[in-house]
Length: 270
Image (cartoon, rainbow, N blue to C red; front, side):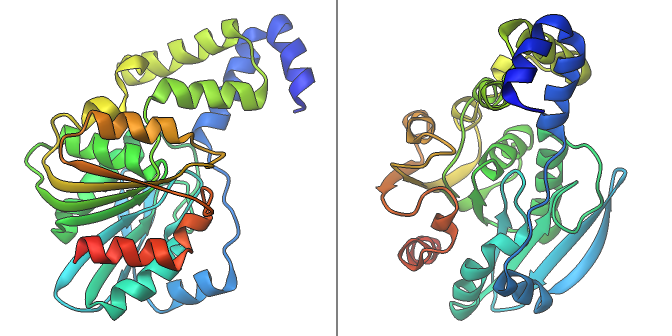
């Protein structure tokens, strides 16, 4: 639906457009993987894991004794970490990852932050990992999982960019789709009614104040066009255990394929 049409329809049919925006928030698009990403998945041990109504695809690359869980972003998938997987294996790690509900090769249907996050908590326990790496929205799902499971103890956690406030995500989708404030309000009401959680409380900068993480590193490109660096900086300012590194020339997605960044990640985990 074209943005201008949505703007007009927002005034005429606010409830219908709120449903359209809700679908944009809860139905991730599946993006095609590159050849090397598919090759990396082919080299993994795969497992079909039943989680709620979904069949979740799990991946393990056997390496050494050290273990790490990789958490992809919204509309991402495990294959996006192919370059990082290779470097981690060289450094003696066993690597675990997954395709979240409605992502990658997991079963399709609507999903949410809550479902994604709950799965992350389940997998941290399943694999008994103390090292994590997340990309983008994976940082929201992971910090929320740790916030809801205070018994989980993480020694090292690297966040390759992170959003902060869920209201900012709603603002981004509203701007992208072209809905007005009335429709945005209806969208928020629907989300809060379904989840029982006030949207304004869903902030990474709040979650990190109480989560059990010994050391964290946030890396963010200053010219990231998907998530402004100010959001990561606010998370860092509220997280005593974190350090922050501003980088340049990687953007939002190439950060996952930039050797210098990946070497930094592994050095930090080591």
